[in-house]
Length: 149
Image 1: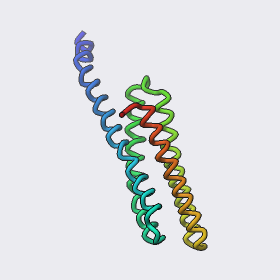
Image 2: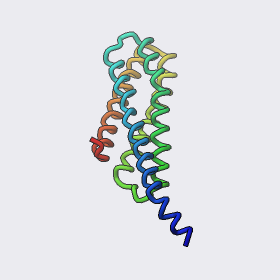
Image 3: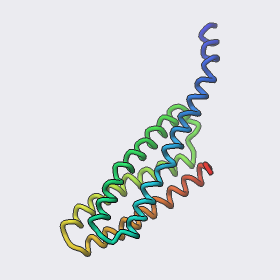
Image 4: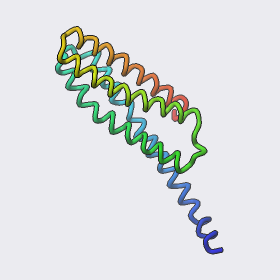
């Protein structure tokens, strides 16, 4: 009997911790668009390829940090409340996979393009513009599917 009363007393604490976890996930996930927008801005306005590469290269840790926080907190939410799995969760997973895979592929292209020619670097810049545009569009779909705004 005492165990049942203790579990009922803990229910408001569990609900509050789930609410805080959801806020934590939403808060850090909202900042995920910031590096994409800054990289797109750099791609369109920086003409010097060396400065452009430095700017994009130094944004990469921020992208991976925010992506890892979003993934790990999202996994915690799914473990904590399996009923929260739905179409918006699937869209979030697709976004995370596209961002992660795209960044790895971008790094591979950069390593090859730096060693070859100016034309290869120009193709790399075009690829980055497409990649970050796709990331921003997918991010907007996630925001619309979740309904944060």
